Image 1: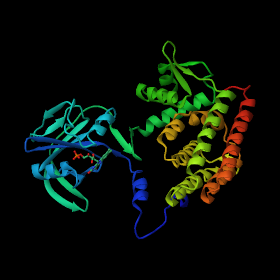
Image 2: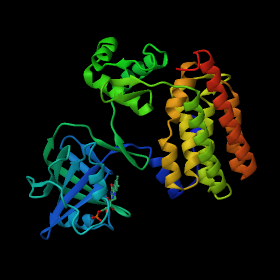
Image 3: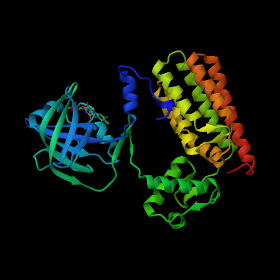
Image 4: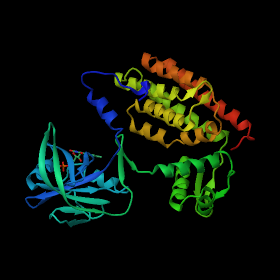
Amino acid sequence: MDQASAGPVSETVDSMLFRHVVGHLATGVTVLTTACDDQRFGMTASSVTSLSVDPPTMLACINNAVPTAGAVARAGRYVVNVLGEAQGQLAMQFAVPGPDKFKDVRVHTGALGLPVLSDALAHLECDVVEQVDGGTHSVFIGRVRSAVAGQGQPLTYFRGDFGRFEFARDDRVYKKARHRVLSRVYPANEVILLDDLVNELKVDHSAAFYALTRLAADGLVRRDPDRGYVVTQFDVTVSDETFDARLAIELGVIDLSIGHTADAELAELRARFERMASLLVGDRFVDFDDYLDANYAFHEWLVSLAHNPLLTATFGGLSIRSVMTRSFGSTPTTSQKFIDVQRDLTEAFERADRAAARTAARAYCTLAKQRVREILAHTGGRL
Ligand SMILES: Cc1cc2nc3c(=O)[nH]c(=O)nc-3n(C[C@H](O)[C@H](O)[C@H](O)COP(=O)(O)O)c2cc1C
């Protein structure tokens, strides 16, 4: 781990910090089901894992305060229903207490006589062989009596939100395709056909399709109902509008949050800044993709300091990544000034200096817009 992201060593870790840090451990999502006293129980759970292969054993950690914990203890058995990527809504349905959590859910009775979610990606039916005390939670160790897997991709959980799983090899294909768009192998307004991409990159259809959908999410191509995937045009207006919109949000965040930020929040802002700074050395990106991720993470955190979900969602809706990729990502050279001005911004938050933060945010926006103009000047104003 680099020093920038190393947390302070203390006897105990603050629960808010723990929640944030442990959220980086990505998991799958399951619904645990059981039944007792003629009643069905089900709850969303991510603290579920395989314990051993021989004998096949699972474990599930359940909060003693929720009714499902008592029900599993009484029934002495449970089913782990592994959710598929389209079942985020189902996960939410089983994550809140309610009189009928199984409403509109397809269920059948499994080998142990328990309710099994028919559309889940996989099921493991278990007999409880041990219940271990874990403070607020109980660890239910379960011997697997029946295991069935279907087809599809899993739902994932990372940093408090649901997402999709992706194979690293698909990511490599996406990066190659993106490089072709950025280096203008495919010029603006050209159609990229799925079969062409398959042949040019010598990859299978699913990896090529994944690359196209991700390029569309980045804003580098758009899906035209008649023509297919068309390379979008990028110009100074798109850049100015995007950076101005980010500035407007960040100025609002500065007004709302400066002077009201917790020490742990400022420490995280600093850690994200240091990570970003380590990826821009001299006037060059160490690795543009890593810099982009770190830069986005820094600004995303800054916006989250306002504790306003609408502002956070509006920020998430800006095509910041696409604009930066199409402009800054087309050349390894950049300017150390980007780091200087974002350091000013970080320090202004640390000093609770609203005026200095506003100045730094404006300077950063101006710098970004100017840099895009410089890059576009080499390509006739468009990419
Ligand atoms: C993604 C996610 C994962 C969760 N994982 C667990 C878990 O592993 N253990 C647990 O006790 N609660 C977990 N919960 C919370 C329970 O789903 C929630 O308390 C639920 O209401 C319990 O159901 P019940 O009240 O009907 O028993 C999780 C919630 C979500 C959204």
